[in-house]
Length: 137
Image (tube, rainbow, N blue to C red; front, top):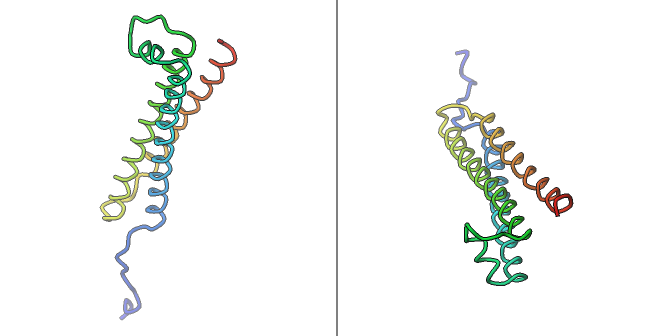
């Protein structure tokens, strides 16, 4: 008689779902932004320097100019950051699935550590871009 007002709503943790989905969406947007920035950077350098510039990027024995070194180093760091963002997105989607099926609670710390690591690599790439441009050149 004491449990007649007790209701069992079979719904997952809505707060965890919203948090994990927003982390996945923002990681996906930032990863795509990194990739597009690298594409724009390579395309702009190709338009400004010509076909020889693009061939020097591909050739491992080429004597690289400052622009080619800049594109290679910064582009590589941005692609690594994009890979970390995409890994964060996949982990967040996996944790969202686990929360929605109520198998276990979402492990938010894993998602946030992956996201922080991705942001750290992105900040490293941006600092290297500024230092490479203003102090080395």
